[in-house]
Length: 227
Picture 1 (cartoon, rainbow, N blue to C red):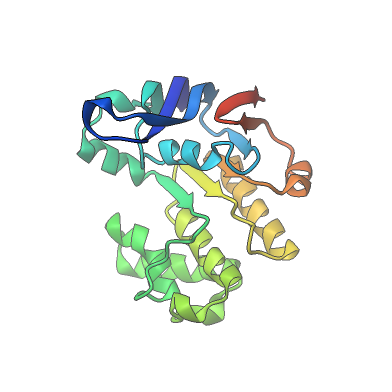
Picture 2: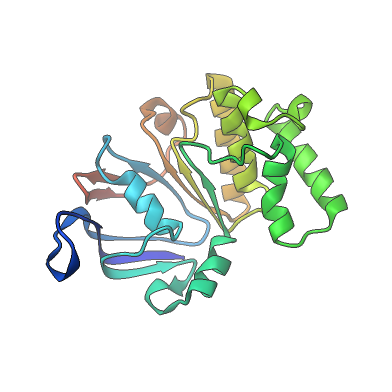
């Protein structure tokens, strides 16, 4: 499902034009995740976890090497093909990225509406998902009126509502209490059991210990452990 071969990623550095330098963030990354696999993504701050997630959800392209996501070779895809591929990927961002002018319900419903689902089905599915994450009484609340933990739960519900083939989560339990963190991990584990591939970046070693799974560990932009 996912395969990286000698992938590197660099941000533009100093200068401009052909002579501009680039700052390498990831170097010589190689790993594979089978369909239905679960991986922790571990490493200290600045190790490259967020950059690797950006490559996985197609927000950036590798500077070198070959990347295959959901069985698709990225180097040969058009912009339209990448947009369609993104619809099969659910992402939980660290900064939530909720639309401030939409209610909690409409933020979660957005992926289903983009996919053209019937409105009746959308209302039932979104209400059930928000009930499951403990926000049944907050359906019509705007993000600004929600706590950080509540916003994170809305972001999680939005990421998984469409049953994507791949879920990527960047520190998804950072604003949750222990009970909600456990509930989230149970949801991710159940989706994984049903065949969804899952990659979770985390600093929470206790949570990793409670849910043992193979880990990708980064240090200074290099993969130092795979498995």
